[in-house]
Length: 73
Image 1 (spheres, rainbow, N blue to C red):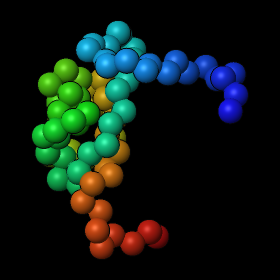
Image 2: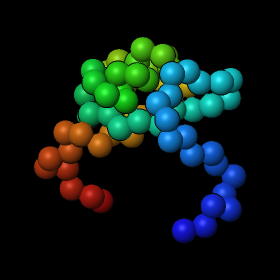
Image 3: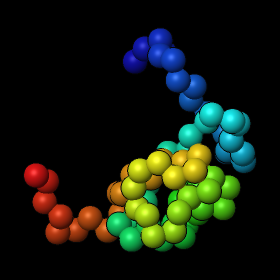
Image 4: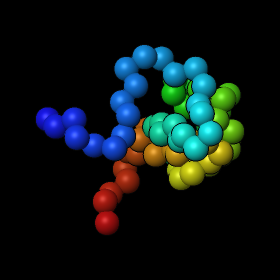
């Protein structure tokens, strides 16, 4: 695996974001953001409750939980 990419990988725990940084996290389909990285996004990145996907404040939600029964197109 090459390390020749423009992105920075952060191995430690994130406690705040700098201006222009986006925190990407997994969400449930209801957009509750109640635990783990979704809770961090809600508390520190201006994430919208009830919105399970897309750009929200300094975060980007990707629905990854509660997808049972959803078929790909």
